[in-house]
Length: 385
Image 1 (cartoon, one colour):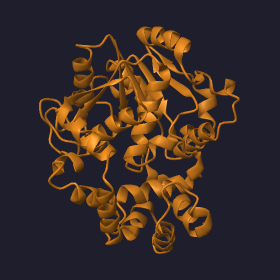
Image 2 (spheres, one colour):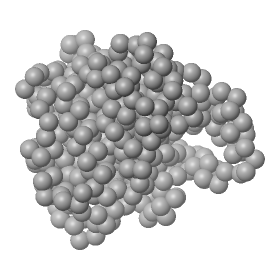
Image 3 (tube, one colour):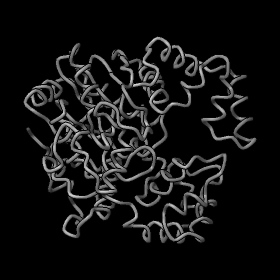
């Protein structure tokens, strides 16, 4: 049996290793679909995608596939759809495993089916609450009060778990969902328990140059990590892009609607860095994550029509011997081209070109000058361990 995971691994840590060990108690192998250069909350990944993929292989994953940027830098439903449909395309995945605060697959599935079969009355209520100034997540939670436990629509891993199940339902997938209860610490927890810390805590420690060796199942030298990638290194580029952008152009950018483009342009005019821009643009209606994603989407020219629920390719980032066998098997069933060498992919895919732009822009956030060249997608081979 082959299990799939949809992940960011930003940073891969002992909690992820625990999850994989639990999955492998019932599965023969694990395939991870991992975000590349940008992550779902609208940030740069802590280091490049190949280093993070290598960490995942060391930690027990057998094959790492890149989640295209048009899904990785997107709202939860689109993030989930991209990951699920990538696994569907492979044609060999039996189960989708994911962590959740809830840990109850029946409860999560019930919530997913309720959301997927939303009544016209509930839809109208959501629209009303949004028009009243609530963010969509808050409007959703209020509309389903009494039907779905509030924590299922507020805890980050529960939210993604429900979206994964909804994506499985929508795609009529044969893949079965399995959830593993998060152990020891929550998503944004700042504590360390039994050698496990949240990824956000570990990222903060890396920014402070603190020792994280006991929190990860590899050494930083194993993945050639030297220092974090930082969006602040391209603050001027972000602010310049937003100040010079025409509102009409921005309306074509992913997640730029309902007047958000005007708020961001206005915020850019009185901000000199990305953090201040998001702070100045925030409101009850627009979450910080959405503002960040929309701004970064404009930076890499992520147009709305680039998005499609079905990926146009499978991009391999890393694998071990088992992963190589899985890939060989997948080639018999896969419903899209499998890319191991970017230069050989000549489909002219706008989705793939977006990935290349994302890599080139994210490289500017690297800690050292020699790491900031463009074209890494064409010069870096998949990691094989």
